Length: 425
Image 1: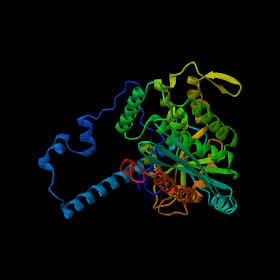
Image 2: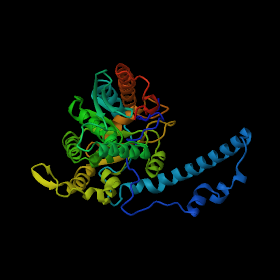
Image 3: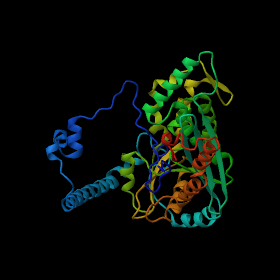
Image 4: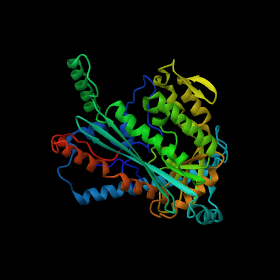
């Protein structure tokens, strides 16, 4: 069964860990020049495309020698770059134009780590949340199962599930021929996109993101809350294209950031290579406060999609504002209170990215360091990994088994077998 779940251990994770998707502004087109290809790969693209340069089969010895040479050269260059980052760039983090409070590189305090282990982590003072989505897709019916789990080191567990049933045909109209044509057209669009219609994407991404943060906020009883990915994802900010979900997400995000404040989110597959390069220059048990989240996502408001439905109104406290004002205000007033940080727990492990409230970033960094040092090879919070695995265990195969049984009970156990697209998303 294909997996597309949270991925601290290298498994692909589509939604979360793409905190800053490469969304072009309106009219902008991405292009890669021949010069850029040459600079990146060290050879002309015409040579790459020339089949005379392609090898028949694989010469293992020659390939290993080349890969070993390339790796050694890349690591040596990266080591030089990291030394320059430590000496030249790290001091500038404190004085950058929009540097947040406590910006810069800090060593973890061992006494604080010890205290966190004894009085916070292992006593249940931190609770982690993670979610997963299973999709059972057939021609007559697509079922989305969204599962979210809470977990602490004391073993407290809460598992929350939601199922959505999407049918192309839900009611009859006065024009059955047009209805059939409309259904066929929708299915053609779904097949062409490869990832489902807009409602499917809404269920699979935006609602799961909302569920994780809402459950973490309103069902956890621990003082500190640990989440996965970017706290303000693209899907949450836009409501997946749904105004009501966007408004409810804004309420949850505001309450989490402005009122609760004691949270930390960790991205298991961050895509910002610039920040990761900075993070790799950290020594073990160091962390860096780099920027605020609004800097990372402010370009999203330049898309025209955020200006649609301008007549709609939402509330911000007691103030009624237009829907088009909501996203810029969230970025300006909420995302600006979240810092983007980096940490490195062990010598063997890579750097990781975390997000925390600007007033609690120091303790948040110590919490993720204290939890990540329990996994020498990953340097990723163990509690977050455990929560992901519990969620996959609780919700993993239940939808598939239930759906197969239901189709068999309906007398069609095999009819839609070839049409299924199963797996966790």
